Length: 209
Image 1 (cartoon, rainbow, N blue to C red):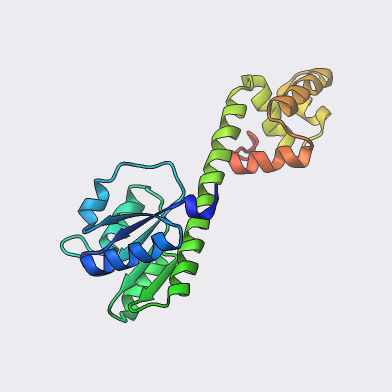
Image 2: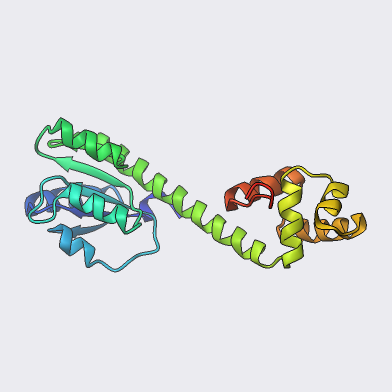
């Protein structure tokens, strides 16, 4: 999937701005959706595509900052590029602190806009890849037997096989068998690889939990 396969959602109550910016972005190859209010955007069906939100700060009823807060609380992660006709420094600081990728003041430079959107899309693409990786790791971990999960927790905590055997009151040979199964099922090429997977999953040994 290329950058231009992503969707840019524009939320602005000014029809001229929506038409002008959407035309500019479409001419550059972007896929664009436009909305006249935050409420209209919230009625949009969820899409499983890298996206970003080009959001006007000043909107009727639900403002841009209010929409940003709502999306954050609802855990609907979509990177935001704010646009405004007012050089509102406190608002821009608030928006950036809340996770906005960029804050542009109208009239903004075309290349500056393209750069901000590209950055936002890459943020979303990276987040989606991370979530997909975590889902896959969780599926692998859940495929382990309870004993294999115990062995994995102890192994990634740094214990040697004989120490794991003592900790779990099983033979060292049994630990080796379970450890081999863990490595195979988790698709881990090395202990370091397994440790990284455990860190991403938030898995700790029984001693540290």
